[in-house]
Image 1 (cartoon, one colour):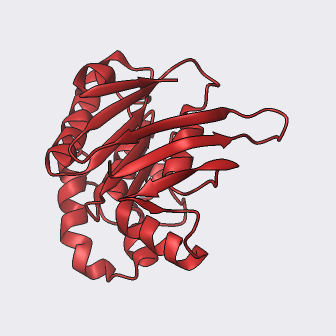
Image 2 (cartoon, helix red, strand yellow):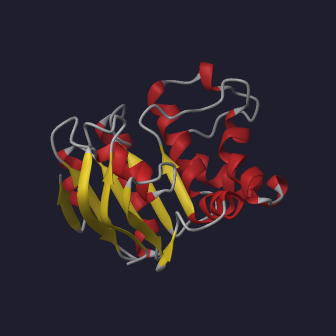
Length: 211
């Protein structure tokens, strides 16, 4: 497994764990659908796997290295270089241009944005959002914003891609472009985990984990 949760328990209140004694993981080259009813912890599990949350008990391991045992600075740098995350609401900074939003991971990874500008523009074009470089998130649709967020997640060709309902705001044609791009990332060796209720996503994935 590239990324694995082993006996993980977590909740936002001590009296009510959302994820309890859960073990799951994703291998290189897999595109896995994470499904289940609302409130069962799909988004929370994505945050745990990406090191954005720390489990109460159990362990999350990246390439057999426990994330919680790392110093904060090292975990942050590893997350910037090894993880691409697509949030459910796109989470684009309204103060930045669309191009800057895609290039944002370079800032956290200690890399030069200029070195990745061409790749960022290529990703935007592939996703059908090749807008003028000065366009801002407030000037684009929700569907375009979600595709920009996926471009951001893919920029550094991360080992692990976590996506939270990435097709939720997309029409069928746009969803197919997004799914094809994620499948290509998996084929190139990334581990892709998608929290979803969308049958279109489930059908394209290689495996399903149900919570």
